[in-house]
Length: 125
Image (cartoon, rainbow, N blue to C red; front, side, top):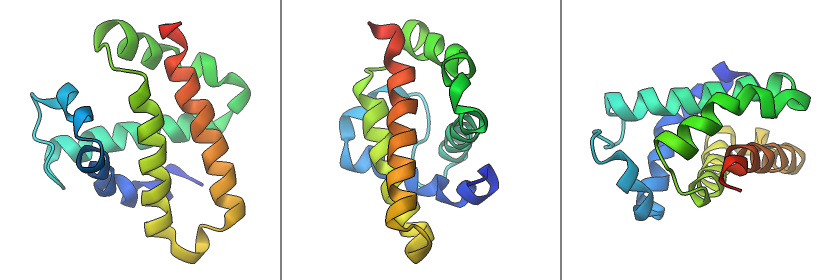
């Protein structure tokens, strides 16, 4: 799945802030309303990082190293949020792709996003 294919799910990522309101605390300085400039910009960064990591999963730790450091030491994001984001991304993909999001695609994306979240949370250990 290419990053271009994933870009339309960006507006759906505000679902995380609705379903898991505690995750909003890290974004109090941004306009996180649906389709806001900040929300679309951050969503695009997430999608591009997911796509970049998928290019070579064997190098996921190296690819995500800068994001690990940023989120763990500078932003101090609760690592639970990475799992919540993964869940919301799966829901958004399912809504957007419909029947194209087969059980095989769902399982593959769930496995990859779980690995993605685990790598981001690695610096917290």
